Structures are given as C-alpha cells and as structure tokens.
Amino acid sequence: MTKRFLAIACLALAAPLQAQDFATSFDATEVAPGIYTLTGAEGKFGGGTISVLVGDEQIVLIDDAMVPTAQPILDAVTRLAGRAPDFVINTHIHGDHVGGNALMQENGAYVVAHDNIRKRLAADSKGAGGDGGLPIITFSDSVTFHVNGHEVFVFHVHHAHTDGDGVIHFRDQNVIHAGDVLFNKVFPYIDLDNGGSIEGFIKAQEKLIAISDDDTVLIAGHGDPVASKADVETNLAVLKDGRKLVKALVDEGKTEEEVLAANPLGKYHDDYSWSFITTERMTKTHYRDLTSE
Ligand SMILES: [Zn+2]
Image (cartoon, rainbow, N blue to C red; front, side, top):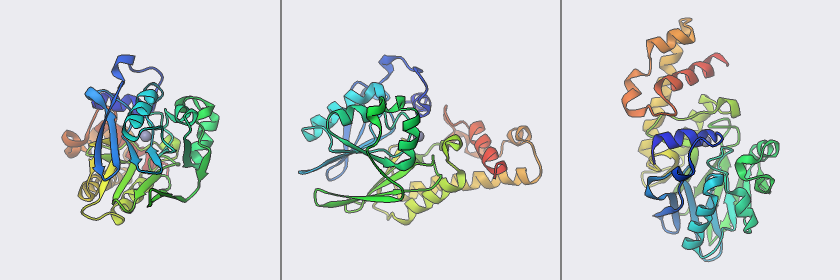
C-alpha cells in the first residue's frame, strides 16, 4: 500500500483515484487466534486497516473500507468465515473506514458505532454507502460484546483523531484495534475539523500504552498495520516532542509562517513525513491546535 493512496482515501475525497487503483481482493493475515487483518491484495489500496474476528458463533468486522471496496471486503469475510459478518464496528467517521456499512447491513450485519459517527453520517451518508449505512446501535462511552466465549470491549477516546473514535480491545486475545488513533511510524492525521485534538490524541495513545503489555498486538489504522507497545511509545514521543518544539516558537510570538520557516520538526522529516501528512502539514496542525486553545 502506498502512502499516496492513504493520503487520498483518509480524506475520503470524491473520485481521486481511478477504479483500477482500488483493491479488488483482500489478503488475510492472522494476528492472533481467530483475529485477522485484511489488507488490499497486490499492493492496492483497500481503505484503513480492517480486522475481523471469526468464531463458531459470531463474526465481528472492525471497519469496512470504502464504497468501491465494500464488495471485495464482504467477499473476503465470506471466504474466511463462511458468511457475512454479524456485527460491524466503526472506529470513526472517515470514508476509508465506513464505506461498506450499507452493503454489510444489506447482508444482515448490525453496524455499531459511537454516537457522533451516526450524527455525522445522518447529515451526509455518502461515505457509508447511503442511509442504509447509518449505524443502528450507538454508544457514548463504551460497549462490550460477548462473542464466541470472549469479551470484546469497545471504548470511546475523547477528541483524538476525531470526536467519534472507538478503540476495540479483544481482551482475551491481547489484541487492540486502535483505528486511526494510531498511525504507526508516520506522522498522524489529527482531524481538527471533525473534533480531533492533539491533546486528546496524546491521551488516547497513553491509554493504549496503559492497557498494553509487551505481548499486545496493536492494529493501526495506517502506516505499518501491526504495532507493539514500544512502537506506540515511540510514535507518542515524536508527537509530544513535536508539540513542545512548536509550542516554544508559538510562545515566542512567532507567526505560522515563521514557525514553518524554522522547521521545528526537521529532525523527524526523513522517518515520519509522507505524502498526506508532510512535515509541513504536521507543523501546521500543531500550530493550529496550539493557537486555537
Ligand atoms: Zn481517519
């Protein structure tokens, strides 16, 4: 998966890619017993990282890609589990995570999501495949699934990537699907216009670390799909340091232009900048976040 594809799809812009750029099939990787990640086959883009819990009784899908890749995702789940999912959990509103909602519900799934996802999709449901993609079960703080003899705990983190983020903790398998609260080894996208904030994103990462141990498998929305607790600590350290570096310049009274010229995140450029969240865009996000408080 190229970073260019991530960039375009994370924004869910209209028709930025040609149809041949989208995944037409998905590869499954088992990351823990019964839990698979699904990523676009042949390096094609399928949306944010998807995972699926397969068991004797229930099938739970976490995120369902984009409208153009909804059918291939349904096909991939059917191949893996023998049928369509019983539940879909949306990690957040972006169109590269909710695009298969309508198709999944047509095929018998219940879509579960944070209240704010339904609220935003009710205003514009295109990214979820139309009104049939509205979540029919919503939660404000947390919800627990009791499936296949296991607990799956879903909890909200406040104003992190957006204002409707849910993190899925497969407690018994020691797996956490973090969605876009975790960008692994690339600068994160923090969607200030959809209720995200740097402080909330930092707190969400601290929470991920607090509930992880050295064996925890963390599934990231973008970047390398599988992260360790140590990876999350590194990503968080970069974000916190970046905020501190930009804040020092803001405190000196520098304008956005002067902050950009000083290039405070320069030391992270080679390892973390990518086409969607470049060093410049990350710097601007910090600046805007700090000066709008
Ligand atoms: Zn996103």
